[in-house]
Amino acid sequence: MHLIDLILHDNSITLTAGSDQTVISAVRCDSRTVNAGALFVCIAGMTSDGHDFIADACSAGASAILTDGRPVSVPDGVAVITAANVAHAYGRLCSGFWPRRSGMLVGVTGTNGKTSVCEYLRQIWQRATWPAAAMGTLGITCPADKIADTVTTLTTPQAETLFSNLNLLADAGISHTAFEASSHGLAQGRLSGLGVNVAVFTNLSRDHLDWHSDMDEYFDAKARLFDENLMDGGIAVINNDDAYGKALIKRLAGRHIVLWTVGMSAESAFCIKDITPQSFGLDLSLSHQGQVFHFPIALSGQFQAVNAVMAAVAAYASGMPLQDSFGALPSLQPVRGRMQPVHGHPLGARIIIDYAHTPDALAAALDALRAETSGNLFVVFGCGGDRDKGKRAQMGQVAAEKAGHVIVTDDNPRTEDPALIRDEIRTGCPDSVAIWPRDNAIRQAITQMSAHDSLLIAGKGHETVQMIGTETLPFDDAAVARNTIARLQEDSAC
Image (cartoon, rainbow, N blue to C red):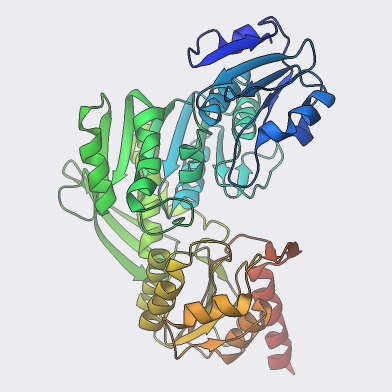
């Protein structure tokens, strides 16, 4: 592809040196991944500036450089283009370089529930035999004969990864793709140039305030999916039980889109009338345009039932008949690390793994388990280091209010002192017990449980590593829980 093909229709990008006929082989924002013919994008981040690595990129064979307009020195023959907002231009360049997409794209944003909604939506599509994929925190999930599963540490990856993966899925015949849109990804322009047919908003609560200055800025970032990416004539699916969902509805009043609301309030277009815990999971009742639907779903937690309904409505928005989209709800399988049960406790105690790492998510998970637990409710959790410190005491307070036995441990302490993080959490739950390392906390909680008790192991969910200092070490909550149960089973058999 020639440079002119990428910048011709983007008036924000200016060619300042070299030829617009320069051949581009890839778009890269990391000088360590630059290959011959790549266009290197100089993004000024919080800890490093791509402009400092121009010489490295040119040595690796870069044929063009995108800068913010500051003077730069490049070898003869290397083209230089500039943009006032390099990060957003980077997204558009990637969109142009990897232009193919699934015919149906659904973007899902919100603080909690993104992964579950995307995966439930993929399952609903797949049940209808529509070739489908989900992209996000769990990597890419799609039929095994299409592409191999991948794992990423970013909910919304860098633009070159996002667009190249979308291109790959389209080439593999995937017709329907759901992806998670994070506030970081939206604010940094990783989705610039990506049009979506359906946009879903789950909820908004405190998170990422180490990066966003306040909740208004956080909300504005999430709203970009609807302001900039949702195409005219597209459909917005919004949880109108959420205060920010209501604000988003008002914000979209001038858009030429279709707006569908989901919630428990009577004015919701898709009204969830009742969610009742049962031995098999949940019994769900909902209504739409005078029709009432009843479905059993094999999931735990009221909030997961709401996520499932959001996915079914998104499937309907994507063109699936209503009876088929809602009719798929009983077949949904739990998502890894999202209210994921770990079976086999010799006394029948219930153990749940969940990614809850915000005050609202922890409260929702504990409320869900309390409604389904006749015995004691245990919780094991921690908070991530180098992240929003303000939520630590709040999460401790939630745990103290909603669980009978609170064990505070380590999450991903990163470069912070784990003991100080635990102390900050325990200001909200002074009667809690601090146990570390994390595997000891999980083992002790499971060992203490009796029949009819429940345990929530919260914060890491699907993650299979733990970040301590500058090291990334193998760690899996579910594996620790299963191993502990296996030892208990052996002891009970003796």
